Image 1 (cartoon, helix red, strand yellow):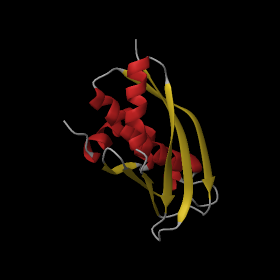
Image 2 (tube, helix red, strand yellow; image 1 turned 90 degrees about the horizontal axis):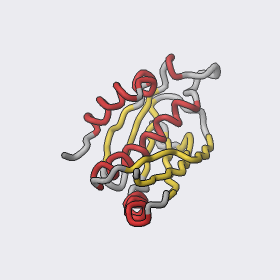
Image 3 (cartoon, one colour; image 1 turned 45 degrees about the horizontal axis):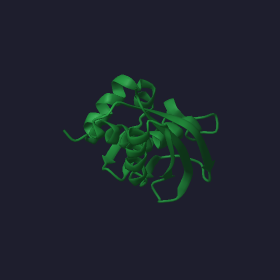
Image 4 (cartoon, one colour; image 1 turned 30 degrees about the vertical axis):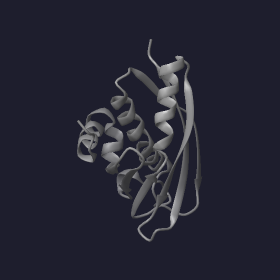
Length: 151
């Protein structure tokens, strides 16, 4: 059964309620890309009347992690996943609706294959770029994911 944006948003509500309450939502998902959105509101703002950086981070991480979860599920193996490192840069005040897109889903399959074959943990970097409604980049997040087969 394929994962859909709606199914993942239901999962989000129960398993990551802080992201749900802040308005983070999955909009589109495929094997190679994922799009998430979050809208600047009172509940997710900082004292400077823009979106708190951690809320942007939740939306960005979700755009990468959703694909990792989906590909692990499709592999049929029990595999753990964890963010080991992340980097972020902020280039414009985040107001309005921010859309995060990750197009690095092709990196996941190789890491899953390698951890299943070797039993060793594997790492890979994925990038998510956040743009405002005018198409201007407001932030860029890089996440180093680790996957390891559970023994």
